Length: 166
Image 1 (cartoon, rainbow, N blue to C red):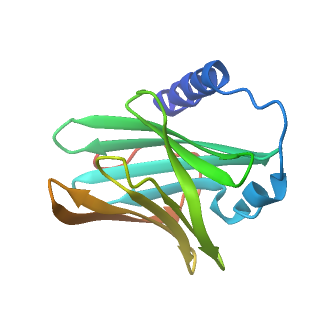
Image 2: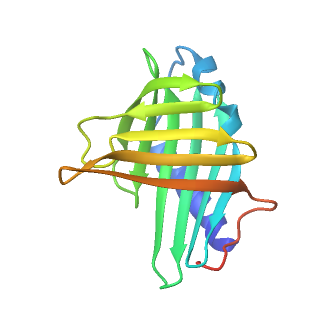
């Protein structure tokens, strides 16, 4: 639990240092993604992936994703969805790197797609609700080959503290 709290604190500092929104053009765009808010976990035999979304507040949501494998390997990513002048964008900062912007492409009932065709991989990020699950998918071309990765998260009953993979 201490690791998760520390990552959330680190992510808060990282976001506050890299993002300051002075004016929100249309905060309802991001507010329409309220269905993503919460702590989510995909716990498999050799891998645990946790993702926690907070907000939306004044056109912004923020999240941290923490992954752990039975081998001892770990990874993290800071995420943010923010209102922009014309639309909204998803910003991904894997392992603390500079954020990569994925612009809003389309949305449906509890489904949203963001896209950046110039990114190496992925080019698309998709979230949707499937019953009680939050599903996420990244897709695009990697070295000329179509590729995708998908996660199916259950809502965490209590704050995420790690699982069999972490």
